[in-house]
Structure formats: C-alpha cells, structure tokens
Image (cartoon, rainbow, N blue to C red):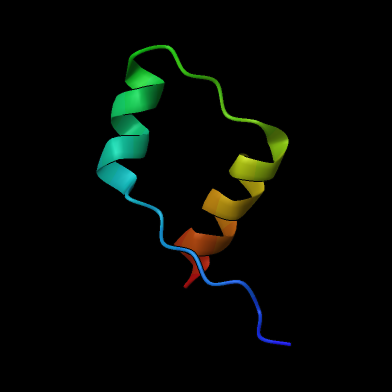
Length: 37
C-alpha cells in the first residue's frame, strides 16, 4: 500500500489562520511534518 501524499499550500494556510481559522491537532501534525521535508 502506498503512503498518503499531500501538499500544503503554506500561503493559503497562513491566510486561513489570519482570518481566524483554528487548526485541528491532526492538521497541526501534518503541517509540522511537511515543514521538516
């Protein structure tokens, strides 16, 4: 089975957070992992 592949659009994420969005624990974890690579 292939691992899940995802791409985070950092600019959109920043905009959503600026507009008051709160990230779930899962999303925070995925963002943290994506910044390492």
